[in-house]
Length: 253
Ligand SMILES: [Zn+2]
Image (cartoon, rainbow, N blue to C red; front, side):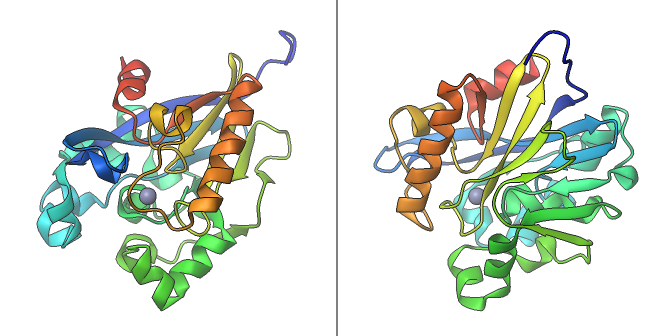
């Protein structure tokens, strides 16, 4: 990228609450507990406003136990009304009803639950992820909650790498393994490329040490995805890890 080729894209991190749970869920074999952020991101492009991941369902802010069921036993949830993705968008001057496209990394509750409050957007997701959610066995094994994502959004199913606007500024990068069809997003900013890793890479340590979480859908695929993220990082991209508290502090401060 050259100085004369300025990016049309702006990226805004949106904090959608916090989860506290056993560290081993993020780094297998490690004892203790860890408090991690639930991030979403607004991407503004001349051709439209994108939300990457949507945080948790808005009802989690008022009654997490009723909304999340067994998941509420695994994680202590911190989510105020201001942490709803719709509230975060409004605080940054965007109308949730006018978001054009939601791209989700995958369908877990802390990434897809907020889809309920983005009613008019198209939903872009890897076909493999959507088809996994349609398969009762895979849906159960991956802990998908149908009420998180089954809201009748117009689907834009993609297979592998996908250039969203055709100008290279926002590109879906398949990073399967955490779930069957997980994807990350490459965003080209003036300052360089950023990779919104999602749960393909929870933490800095996940990538640096190839330290996997305790629960992985497909370990070989996840390791291959980490190799891909590593190669992107070697090429100069900055990786925004999916749930890294230190990185998050640096992004929102
Ligand atoms: Zn996940």
